[in-house]
Amino acid sequence: MDMELIRSLQGWGYVAMIFGLTIGFYAYIYHLYKSQRDGTKDYEKYSNMALNDDLSDSLVEEKYPQDNKKDNEER
Amino acid sequence: MQSSNAINYDYTIAKCFTVATIVLGIVGMLVGVIIAFQLAFPELSNLAGEYGTFGRLRPLHTDAVAFGFTASGIFATWYYVGQRVLKVSMAESKFLMFIGRLHFWIYILTVAAVVVSLLMGITTSKEYAEFEWPIDIAIVVLWVLWGVSIFGLIGIRRERVLYISVWYYIATFLGVAMLYLFNNMEVPTYFIAGMGKWYHSVSMYAGSNDAMVQWWYGHNAVAFVFTVPIIAMIYYFLPKESGQPIFSYKLSLLSFWGLMFVYLWAGGHHLLYSTVPDWVQTMGSIFSIILILPSWGSAINMLLTMKGEWGQLKENPLVKFYVLASTFYMLSTLEGPIQAIKSVNALAHFTDWIPGHVHDGTLGWVGFMIIGAIFHMAPRMFRREIYSKKLVEAQFWLQTTGIVMYFTSMWIAGITQGMMWRATDQYGNLAYSFIDTVEVLHPYWTLRAVGGLFFLIGVFMWAYNIYKTATSSRAIEKEPQYASPMA
Image 1: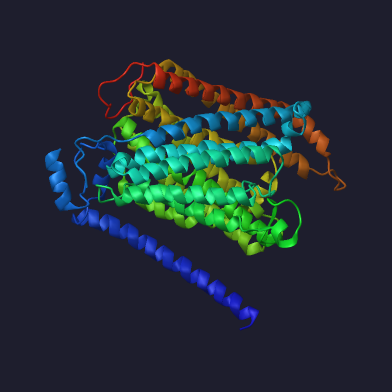
Image 2 (image 1 turned 90 degrees about the vertical axis):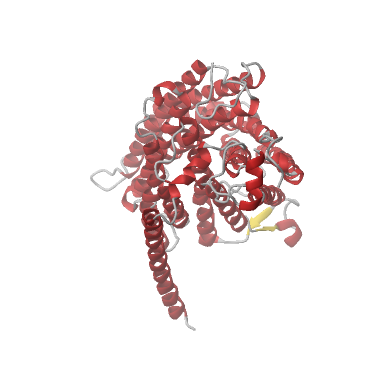
């Protein structure tokens, strides 16, 4: 493989990567807002993790629902 | 998992790093003020022999504020914020407490080695990467220990989802790990070629390759030490202190990915008009401009978090620190891209405008956020109210004045300097010699040093206030949920 071909592949690879990442990024934006609008996922509730951050505060989402059910009852 | 009935958050490690933040802040900024006065009054360089020269002290200043004050602030806030947003106490894991302690003490020993070696003039001569290979290895060890702390705590968390600040702390860990390893690939000369002392080394890269790796690292040190972890802090401390949820959590996620993707390509702007390939320079310029978007995404998100609650600025000096930090973040992330435009850079490169830009970012954004974060943490860690609200207010205004003096003097000095260097007479000869510029710039350098001194006095006021808070302020019964109590 000569140097010219390697440079050409590098250039096109770079363009493809930028293009792919840009598409991916916009798809992510669409996904976030669509999920919120459809009610599939409420991203805004995660702000409460900073506001209600005492150990005795209720969890925003449980990691192990079964374990934490018991944990919450004890609290 | 244990019941949380009998446990509280454990701030032992956070307290240790808080002390380190304050001490290293004083050291780094004191040295900064000394060298600022040396630039204005060069005779001050001769006060302590070789140890007091600008060449020895400058790397000590930059490394002490970046890897001392700022890194300690990052660790202190991680060991505080990490527990709270993951809803798990360090006290629940003896292993993590041990790792945390080890992390702190290896860090302190490494800092001591850095201070001694830089004062002795032992350096690799790479900017912000001056440490010789034995110190680099110690830094890798302490960084891995921090990683164990981060992922260990995440592993035993109760909250399923990682709060946005945790994303930013993880990015700091991964980003610095990658950058530090690649830029510090070096050959120990004594062991390979029998040259120099046992601790000497040369870079594994040469020429313009070395320059490109160095500024890929150098600029991203700004990204992953001065930006990413500070955003982690503001996403926690501003909402928590003000009692307001983040304006848009989705925007915080978008800004995160935008910043991660764009920042890593911008370093080429440090090498404009140099011998590196032209496309690297153009790419550095373009990505620097694009960088405005994710940067302002975070900053505007923070300012809008205060929507309808601006009255808090009058009541709560900590909110002032955070809001002004966010504003300085907007200023410096607009100024940086402007300087990265090739035609602007032709004027700005190597002038005082560059340190002016760096310092409105580091003093206004990084400094104010870390100072404000520790003020918020202090009443919760020590179970006492902040010793003096008046002192916090006075510190805020003194430091704000200092920052404004610093960057405005450097703007004027830098642009004057750039114009004088380029000026030619009717025959095309340079109109000014170097000493002509020095004479013109002298008042601005003095003003800069005084501005820095104001900021340093503010740091002493902060240290005193935190010391009094920890030792003799009024005790509080119950932890405040939002606004920090102060006398």
